[in-house]
Length: 67
Image 1 (cartoon, rainbow, N blue to C red):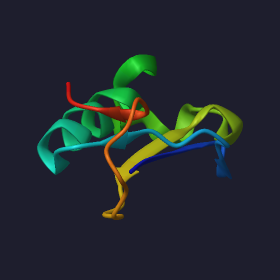
Image 2 (cartoon, rainbow, N blue to C red):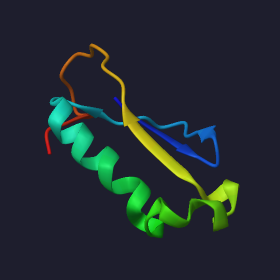
Image 3 (cartoon, helix red, strand yellow):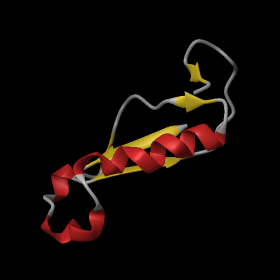
């Protein structure tokens, strides 16, 4: 499950992936949309994005992404 936090608030719609590798692909790229975090201290805390993958067991279905 891809978990996304924007400004420290959990976003209500998690995404489920069949593979942890695919999930991590997206988790790595989502925070980069506003540039890199080398200058994190200059970024407004409400605009900071964190994404990570949490392993959960789900049934296959239309809401489980493959790529």
